[in-house]
Amino acid sequence: MKTQLEPQELKVIANMIDVASQKGMFRGSELLAIGLLHKKIVDMLQEIEVSAKEFDRQRANNEPYIKD
Picture 1 (cartoon, rainbow, N blue to C red):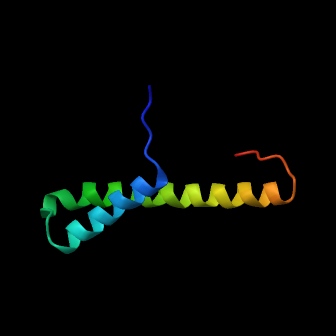
Picture 2: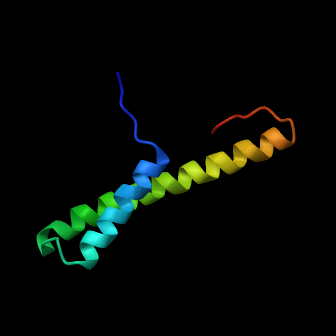
């Protein structure tokens, strides 16, 4: 069974990283890995948003939804 995170959960994680970094909770040696993780999460959220908008557009035009 594969466990997946919902978009809202990804947003919470990204916000947690933002707050923790603003409070100086990461060491300098950790910043690159944490920054890359944050970027990956934000990119995933943007991809989800684009796919949802495309799905809605195609559904509104009665077109079949085909994800590239």
